[in-house]
Amino acid sequence: MNVKNAIPTADLIFISLDSLRFDTAQQLFLEGKLPNFTKWLPKSGWEERYTPASFTFPAHHAFFSGFLPTKIKQRITPRLFSAEFLGSESTTEKTFVFKEATIVEALKNRNYKTVCIGGVGFFNKQTAISNVFPSLFEFSEWNPSFSVTEKSSSGNQFKAAEKYLDSKESVMLFINISATHQPTNIYLDKTKADDLASQKEALKYVDAQLEILQNALKKRKREAIIIVCSDHGTAFGEDEHFGHRNGHQVVMRVPYLELKQNYAD
Image: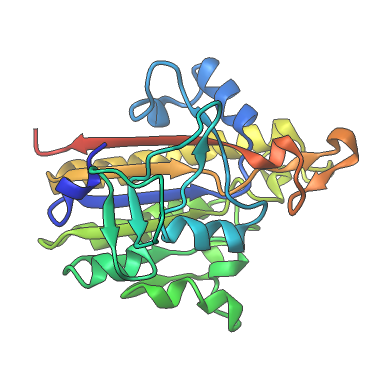
């Protein structure tokens, strides 16, 4: 994808599905249970990639500087966008390279409206560390209805995002989806521990709400670069690994999609 040529007219829509495992996402795709994500996915479904970090804070630092999840079985993954970095082998003639430290700051300096719709604790703006990411953006929102314990979080997040797409200027919209982060048992059975089944139910819920955002993009009638990925996965006891912040393959391998969608057609 040539992001360099798409800037500054195309919107950038970036969604991180917090803690989502690749196998969760791909199994639901193959079962035909992600009808709205399927509108964006290729026929093969989600691409399996390596995340740059095993938990939310470092992964998003990497993402915003252009270090998106990397391809498996490929030595170099060409980068869509990149902070200027001497000796980089992964930037190409199609890469949007910027002098700023993050894509957020770079697009803000190119007259984009930059918007963050927070989800998990690192975006809740309640402490110094949880203001690091929101403070990059011109507009940022978080409230308890977006949080990991709110069963309707994704619908609330997409509705909050919708109003920022009613503008003439280009938009960078980032949404951190909290529903796929623990506790996912709220979508299945609160009396049982989180597991693959409960994370699947959480993702099915997110997919059902995604149409809110997709309809808003259709009304906008602009070209959009769309990136959807997980920041890391979650271990449910595999090889005695639990949660994340560990290097198990179910944590480090994540679902990924990218596309350029022309909603003006």
